[in-house]
Image (cartoon, rainbow, N blue to C red; front, side, top):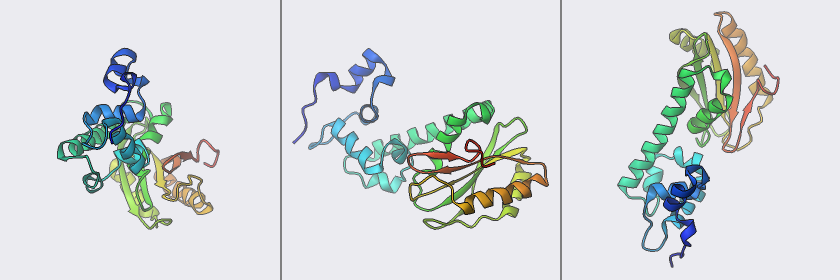
Length: 223
């Protein structure tokens, strides 16, 4: 049976009165979905979808196949969600291209979470930056298993030279959910620092991404 939601829980009216920032994640998604199903109010449907994907970050990283499997999401809604996810990634990337990354560390973390947080296996990515620390490109260079990825410094070096990078931010995800770096992660960072220093490319940070957090080695004094 559908839940009878009170008038003051209607997302559109709430947005008009109080602004988009006043809406919860469920209300924002409900506003995008517009309609529910025969058995579920749109707010109930939005809540169920967020629970299924582990929140907004998980939903924004969901594959088309995963979205197709959700009852109540037709082709039009699936396409809209994919479009919103891509807009979020492009907007964050544009911000990192326009302003130095060191002035917006939260944007860097958000960008990496959008790309890496909900991947089922470990992925190792690199943000290639120019000499003023604006984003040139992001590349996922290596993929591995649930808890291990083999990273080859020579390939990172080649791609840094290809982009003419002056600096890089390293990143990889921990599907286990713990964002703490392992001793092997710290040692890899030092190895890559030494390799890239030869061609005058600085390693600004190595971020470890999980669903709920991003650990910055630079912020923790490990670089």
